[in-house]
Length: 185
Image (cartoon, rainbow, N blue to C red; front, side):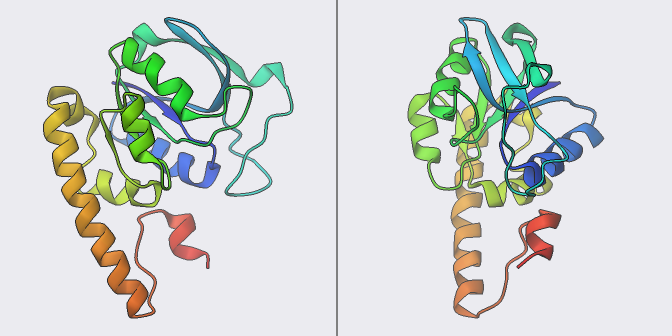
């Protein structure tokens, strides 16, 4: 399956990308875009060597641009806050939806906005790896039954939020599934 990952935090994007590729998916990772067309996006490739582990920047380097023909994309995952001239998932998600691409919002706190723009489902970014590992965010299942996947993912989100709240009250750190987040204060 061809997956478009739109995420500007390299530490998280690289783990998601690796997890998906280990399961046989082809992943295009971008941190934002310079241009949106009806059936294409000119995206900004992520920099796996970004100086800050949680942030990538784009300095206008045209070598990082990639033209993405959306007819070749099966599934997408999109953050809300991005990098570049097109720096909002809320601008990209409607184009994905218009091209029939099932999309999961993976924003920190604004997945409702991404869903309102056309994302089929959403999970907080810091739950994404747990959702994938638990089978709640499986691209194949999302394509086969977007509504069913969205409902299961929402129940997962509620349960995980309760677990994270319990950990906060107990003054312990919950496991996110992201090596970077789990190993850095």
